[in-house]
View 1 (tube, rainbow, N blue to C red):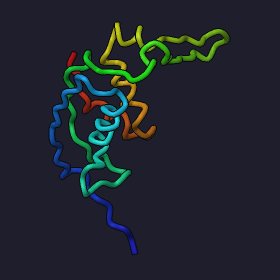
View 2: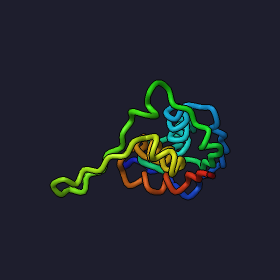
View 3: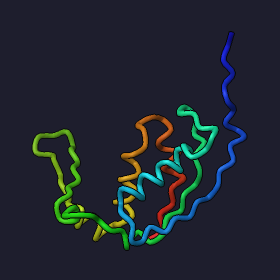
View 4: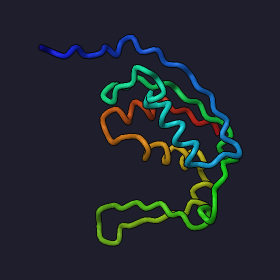
Length: 126
């Protein structure tokens, strides 16, 4: 007996507007990732992209607990010897606070083909 697959054509996407001022980065990113994946819906299945759109406001007023703001470091590696680049959270947040939130949400989504379309539905207003 063959299993019937769900159609993705009938997906209804709501728009969630979130004000993140005064909230912790990790808690907000978890909430956004859940909405983008669609895990809050009763029809959730991991192999379909049934998530909603998320619009975020107030990114400049995010708060960080402990000494994270001075100590957390982001790494990039080019693949070449001596190609490790590091950037502190304080530097990244000073230049592009929207990138810090985008990166946190990106890392919380599964590394599958569905991650890119999920991230396209995330709008961060500066």
